[in-house]
Length: 330
Image (cartoon, rainbow, N blue to C red; front, side):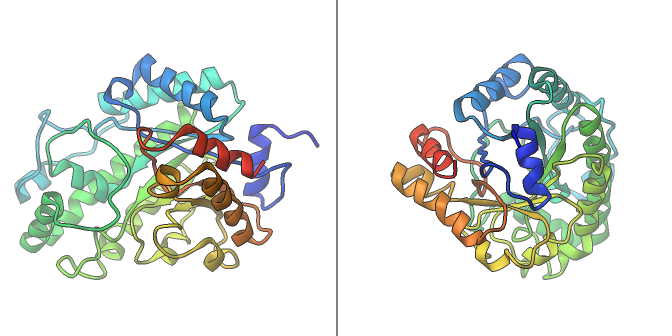
């Protein structure tokens, strides 16, 4: 059988072995390439440079704010949030990008588009808009956004839950629109170590977020490459592993579980194996190649997608390291 990039990834999603293991990697582009023609060109250059088997479409367009630049500070601000439709400017910019890429790729590659879940959006809304985006900080420190949400939870827990419901419904509508615009799925970023803290309550994620996450994924159920990206250091990986999605991606090199830990238990296709923060940035090409091969060894014959566990810093990661990891599994 002669495989294409699409059929290669689809084979792995079915639990089959294609001609070679699919590879992809992704990073944030600068603010000059968040939308429009510059964003289209940046993604196409990235695809050509790395020869990836599928593409994660970046989405650094802000969630809508009304009025523009509004920062959530009070319970009244939470209660003022309302649902947005996909034709809001910030969403329409991403939908336009998906339509552009869909036309350019002509079905030759699957693309999954980035969405941040309701808590991540609320966290962003608790600070002024920013054009700075990069790899995540794994260790939870003191962040004013987290402090603010904790304060709001103490003041009016129901208001926070209501705001998350509003944001979740908006994101679900947007996720559906992304599929209609040409995306093959959504790449939903979730993170529970921000949420289930001693200050917020150890079961806050189950209480306020899990149903919102599922609602977003179900809205994108027509997709064929829906990915749950478990960011940070997961507290309840098993909970995320039951989501209605095709793929689960996490920083297995930076936080448990390892690929070997879950290869026999998780039904979703596994995506990971490359350390975006250390090996890719500071290792040799040989070390990156060895890490890619080790990911396959940990999978022990189970088909997987070899990728970084999260975004990498293009200023810190040498191109030869990415190519070495890619070529090691080809």
